[in-house]
Length: 518
View 1: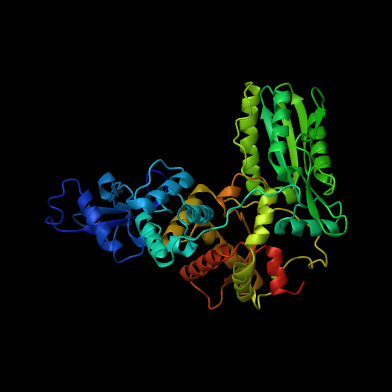
View 2 (view 1 turned 60 degrees about the vertical axis):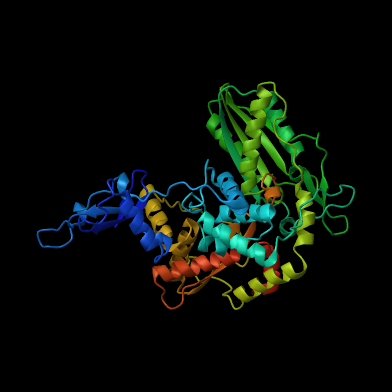
């Protein structure tokens, strides 16, 4: 049965009735648990092996002679098979353990540890693959990590791959010349094209609102923003097209991040005025050719409370970048307020270097392989989802809509995680399968294409950069033949893993290859 442990997670618990001779030399019972777990581990997938084994003299029964599940006792510590720490062995296991520790935020990783049980998920798996390729010269397919998530087993498969093909040299992303015209990345090229179709659009703004409580050193705050602006060339990029062909130009590092200041102290309509300023900020377009494509507004509500509005154009930033920006802004402000120097290490490369590398790297055989995957996967895919909406689909996209909040509480989240562990999926894959089932039921279609964002940060060098890296993956989910939950989860898992292994091809190129009806 599945039972909740002390941390609130659901664990699979086995109840075992055995004679007195079983484990007679085992004073605390943990030896029996270890023996049973090892026995079943050789015959069952890891997610089906119970975490705890409770020894009973007899199963509790109801007055009708049926199993009394409520009478089953909770497992104590001795019921769990303790996986004793075993240090990594050899260079590959050691390198793998160091990468896991850094990515998963744990102090110590042993050779018997499981990547997903330690908190791993799809995004961290992609980062693991990237770092591993640079550390030992092996490109790790995500399917191999899911098949062998235990460190020692994964290391053995890597050693086998190395013995078969040897280490592979991956081209590094190097800093390039700033004396030559700078190219747009594929993602930037897509947004620049859309901006030409709809000048003055605000659909691709990334807004951020911070409420700052306590005394604010406005000089240190502005200095932090200016330093951030100087540090990341992506934020200083503008996009010019003198002959219809776009190129990137970078504003001077000392030009500063523009910030408007507003003082609403003492105003009786301060909250209404704040709302007006938020709306005004959201409705103000960017000029891609002049820039800057990031701007701020500092609104003083009182001496001890400010609201800071920061707006970026998506062509220079994305969701991951917000995390980098907030972390570095916090570190800079703390240092400058205390009178210290800039604490951030210099960046080895910048976003324009990535854009140039991307166009060189995604070519030849690699480009053909990725293109062929998407051509095969999306061949004959439905052009649209026939949802029973109240209004007809407009001829032109308007972005007019609303949001519907969906609350997934702690109990449901624990249940979803338990289901994911049982079927060897990540939480994302499980929720994606559920979403596909809902869309299939509403539309009556069993062939669905669902667009999902991908961080697309598969290289260690670009993890600390601000810029537009995100890609869109078209996941085609097959619900034909009335699959069971288990079958649908397996199909969704295969679809998600294959798409993530081919996520380098930009979405606009996928569209050009597949040529769906527009």
